[in-house]
Image (cartoon, rainbow, N blue to C red; front, side, top):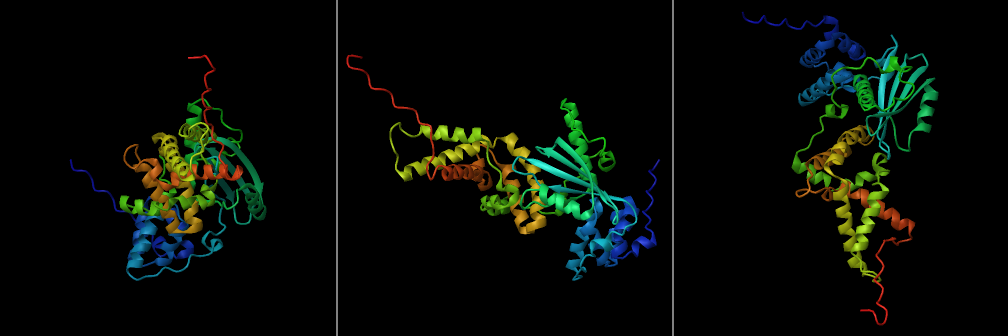
Length: 376
């Protein structure tokens, strides 16, 4: 028997005729038909509705709207400015939103869940994730809007700001970390049960990372060209505090000491070359395949913040670094050829030089004692 043809998706007229102010509610009500609704708006050149969903929507609808904006722009249709947040999100019901604070120097990510209406106080859950997944602690609080902003300023490192992310993605990330942690027998932090109304329900299937929906991609050649200056990314707040662990730096110095003859003082040029060689070697040792693989999700988290604050071009530099890291190997394209990775150890050595007033304390083996008279 032939398979019965699927029924075409029916879009309500009020969805299709929605303006900017009704666009978010329309795609929410359309549900699985949201992408078809965006297609209908595209055929009608409804740039205002598409702009609102591209700016403030979530999931597949937002991704479709961003594609639709490019289609309209190619036709010479310029979208209007997005509505103010108060107009785009009328106070009709309690809403829950999520935002992400990029990893700090210790690798801790903060997810913020905020439940409120426009006129109400904010019920907020702060979920701290170490290494991107381990639930380190959960804090629950209730604050007015102004006090919430002040609390975030005090809590976050200088230069860090929360970036809005899809609620479903944030909830799944917490749920996945919780399941992994329970499976490993690691105790869960207090506060999860109290924050359940903000953290649940979580989707069973992992949504795409929000940065993947931005459509910022580079081929291998462009990534290599743009990644040549990637050491400058360490000037940004998200990367400024990144250093290799003390043990890796000490190993660099020990290996450097083996290259220096005891009791000798090499010329500055010779010493500089030896130091550069050991920085290369330390970079290759430290950034082993497993560590490089673990860096990609953290870089995506950071890229969201870079894109929000510094724009597309700077975010593409992070994309270039991710591509170079993914393609790095021990023989071809070794880690020390990725300026962003090498800069970890360059910063560490510079800090040691600063602390030592221009001198490095290098452990050098003591010269062998001269034999006593009469000894063979």
